[in-house]
Length: 227
Image (spheres, helix red, strand yellow):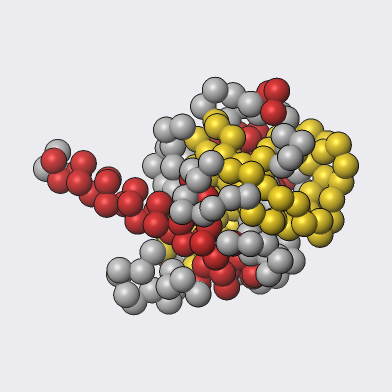
């Protein structure tokens, strides 16, 4: 990350990569204490993870670095206060796999036309059963799962645009997971990086697999076009 308020340079976003077979993940840090738990959860799976704060790089820097995937971290603010997070989702979403966590899911909802509102009850460290249908990052997971929640905001279900589908929910129908129907964009409202969340490592592994599949799909299409 940059120091003394300096912007991180785009040619330094992935300074450690030597193995080109590694999945390069750009992790946007929304100034959250959980960010490095997310970092370690992904890095343990063999990805090359670069962490940059939401106001230390530009969207252009992020796109120029050509990450294989982007993760939008949790954070203590609203989507509109999350630096480049929303604009990066807007610009990269059609072409680069994105995984939004907590605030990251709210940013996805905001970008695609949903409304982010106050949750009926703020939760801080609450374990909740989360129901899902095995889609998106939940594939291969037998539900429901117990998940750790820290949030006072939620994507309003009644405002959900047709391009987004609910992939997970609480018993009282609060949105706990979203996926875009045509873009490789996925999100969860809870914290899969928490040691108390069940199957969090599988969710991260699933996202990395989604990113690899997307990259292979793009390569095949470009090959057919002779590009």
